[in-house]
Image 1 (spheres, rainbow, N blue to C red):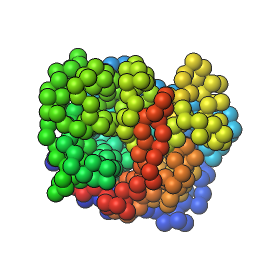
Image 2: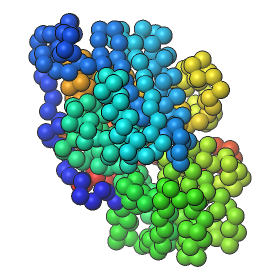
Image 3: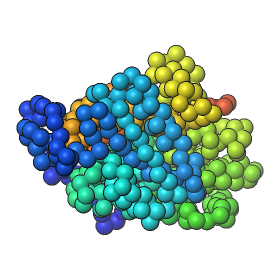
Length: 425
């Protein structure tokens, strides 16, 4: 489902691009932080100079979603690695991370600190639908780029009043469609039970799934929600088990994903096909449950799994693991959240390279004009693509099944743009 009153058609206004010849010069910035010549004059250069770029990120380093906090390590590792090689277009990156504890009011506080005190060029990566929604009015009013937010809500690609904000990962509606397609092909008469987080994240994915299976033989026969402040989801899982559904769609964040998987494993009388959404598919979620208890689990992904031996000789994977050992010693290189951070930072690097002006406006426009950009940590066939009427950078995913001690890809990548079109408002 979407945030009911907020979704709209893709924004034409936010897709207006500067002319290719508008910013031929990157010379000179005045003390007020505006470009000194050409069509860049008057645009914002706060946080960027000829030698530096200052970026801010907001993650739940504490609280119920703290497992996501390590994404910031992956991002920071990428930028430190790039800095050692001369930076981005000669500029070194200063990445400042703030902790919001997965609390929207705290996210607002930290966004203000990054913009007004740290003077960042952009707030890159706010994690979570609630926190991102809490800060985007402020950032758009201040005309501060909010690129590649760490949430798949379809809202970021369909709202036309926040041109400074854009997502990165496949949106939840598209992800839900991948699972719906899989069930239509493999279990066309499936009876589905759903556990979901009672916020825009959970509702968005559930709504996408419900719409995608409408009119088919697949039925959602039971739904249970939970609050992010709940201590556990054991009661919800007991209720869903009584439905006798043969598929469980698990739409949770990591803490509750682990709890749901553990509850499923303990219930010998209920053995549904268990589908877990991508945000809780990391080994850090599965390992506490015991890999022997999550065999056959299904999910979907779009970037390379650092635990998958098929990427052992991959040049980008080697670079990522070497850099993590150097800049974040003690971090687990097989943790998918670290690899996610590397992949999204690499994506921002591509967007910064594509700026026609080294300004906030230049970045705003660059992320909305990506032409099948290749990012080496993404799966083969997955590229970044945006344009007028399309503000969803990644729309291709591939299914995976857990076997042994790791995920194994199966089937072909599903380009949801071609299969279903972009999510509607």
